[in-house]
Length: 222
Image 1 (cartoon, one colour):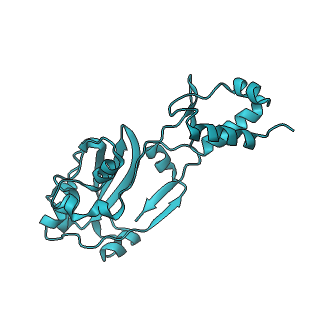
Image 2 (image 1 turned 60 degrees about the vertical axis):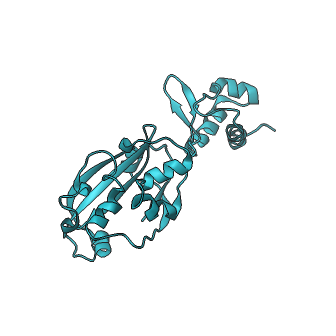
Image 3 (image 1 turned 30 degrees about the horizontal axis):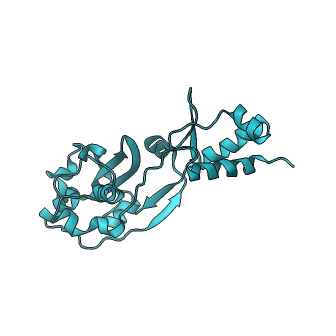
């Protein structure tokens, strides 16, 4: 009995995970895989489509099916917010993650857009203000070696941040110690941080901004 496309996908998946096909290398042509495993090209096409949906490979015009690189990025967790990093040092959260991952970084890996908006219900509840009240949104995009890794947005009361680096959209953190130190100098030193984590499928805007492949989920921290 011949193998099906799911069986072939499992074989190729194992080969990728073993390192038989290195990151950024190209899988053999579909016709070659069909001959090697004694299946038709349609079976190969469906198997490769399954791996693409899993985010293991991506088709690139004039190159073929390329194995996706997966840099060893780690998230430091709660320690990324330690005062020893931003108050007594000069390490903001995304830099702490890079350092623990052994990845190079530069301040301009973070860019931001600052806008004055009206608070929606979620923002209003978090800041204990009325819906529709003015707030500053500081929306950041972080990249690693030119590739997006995550976005993050923070919301501030105008009276707390006007005239500070938190309303400056210059690329990079908001100065030494980042936003936490800015708030501290305003008499608003962060004391307690809590996070909730969930996963979901991305919105169309997130797919475009983060350059996601079909079927690739996102992790959401709030």
